[in-house]
Length: 494
Image (cartoon, rainbow, N blue to C red; front, top):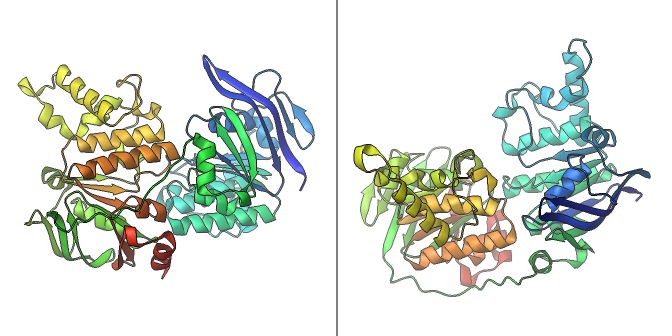
């Protein structure tokens, strides 16, 4: 395949921070090229240079289809056929599918908007990659997976030759990921180059021909994906080895903290019965529509069941709100930390104590500054949250540290049961390891944990016991130390 883009000697410094140092990269037309590295490795800066948002330092070269640039601006990058699909997708939620896809090609000048032309452009873009969406539906009413399709169609409408997908699978289920990877392969067949950025290394290896690894702003190397595996990539990205053992731990003598009996909710799940013991990590996995999150929300009082029973420490609960769940010692970490887990514009400190404001109130209902700060400092220290100033907005933190803040706000409530719904979505491998360490530490202190994830290795290596859900029912139960990834995949897809 011909070379579409070549970067040579690309460097970038922000103040005293060397974000990129002498990085070279070659992208070929019709290839899927994965860019991997931890947070802070330079991936985002490299993407910004390719898309014209940031210029490289003097001496760097950008060559697109044999034409050389010292730097690009966003207009030049777009005209060259470069499109970036960011993790937040950058769509207009209040506009329709057609408007989001086609309006960018019909702006400018003083003529009126030709809505028929916009619809025609959107339809052509969808036909190009075999996507069928209702053109008149507002984007805010679509699932995350379908919004992703809208963003890809928008890139097709702009005659993209290179599409950079930044963490495209972070909020998708395994079923939706499979569909996206199939679409990526279709784009490849049409000669479009895809740069695929992901922290999910198994997905990287499924779809890529080549993998470029960045670490601390430097290029470690570019490798044939067929020669890589999760372990090799993790070592290249971090310089560290990660080993997780399937240790046999007998929890049969532990006290049962939470139990459900024949729990059901029409359209969500049916006849769910299980016990959760003190200090146990219970993994729950399954495909799209299996009912995992709906079950979690019922246990947290936000999705009341139609029938069945929930017992906490032998006492029957009839939860009607999340406040009742919190008062009874149940905490829930949502899979969507950016929307439901954090108030991004608010300080790190405020996000940390938001669940315990009533406990911190002093005279006249005011929160003493000393009590506020000591609480925040305690959790920053206990959960090793990397932060320069707790009064900074929480959005300034990396994904891994944001997730630690979410954990901190719930640990501050001293829960007996902690429900974690996809707790490592969108965080890099080192941050994941830190979160797993925190969860193991909580279990060691007696907290009962439910770990929900569609990543088989996550539930296998970080749970004591695993439940498989399918179509709203529990279809299998496995002891982690007696199971394997292959066994669980078969059970999930049976």
